[in-house]
Image (cartoon, rainbow, N blue to C red; front, top):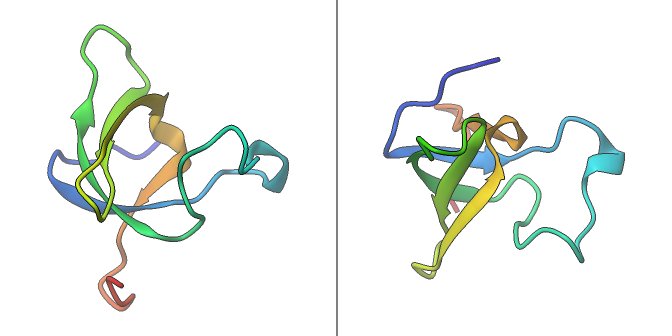
Length: 74
């Protein structure tokens, strides 16, 4: 499992297509988000900020990957 540094740009990429259900996740697949960090009292769960500044927390860190240098941000 990769470690994502706080304040990194990440993309929502569920590991399996069946892990993604638009009704259960407030994220868009492959869209960039700001990763604020892992929640210390909830290991494996993180705090994310979307492009509108909405803070979203408590979702699995494993569903996010670091932004690739060659991918456009938006």
